Length: 158
Image (cartoon, rainbow, N blue to C red; front, side):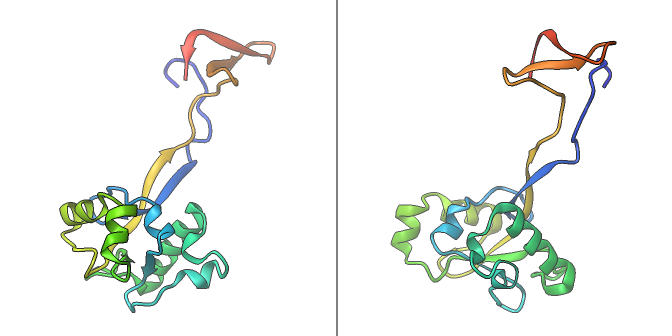
C-alpha cells in the first residue's frame, strides 16, 4: 500500500487443521490419512457429524471449521476447552515409525505426549496467507494505469 500498489484478498487465510496446541507446529495430514481420529472432550470422533462420507479425511477447510465448531460449542478439550485431540494410539507403533516418521518425536517435544498412549492436542493453525498484491501468470506485479489497463511494474515479482 505504501508503494502505491493495491492490496487484495487479505482476508483469505488457509488453516492447517492439526497444529499442535499450543505451539502451533504442524502435524502432517498424513496422521489422519493413516487412520488418526479427531476426538472432542467426550472422546467422541466428531467428524462424521460434519463430513459423513469423508470423516477425518475431509478437506482442510472442512476439518478446520468442524474443529472450531466443536470448540465453540463447548466440546473442546483441556481445562479451557480450547483444542481437540488427534488420536493415533490405536495405530501400531510400526506404522507410526514407518509411515509417519518424526511424528512421535514432534508430539513429545511440543506437546509432551507419547502418541502410542495418549492423544495429541491440536488446533487449526494458520498455514497460508493467500492475499497480497496482484500479479499476472508470470509472477510479475501488475497495477492499473490511468486508462484502467493492467500494466507490469518493472523489476518487481511476487
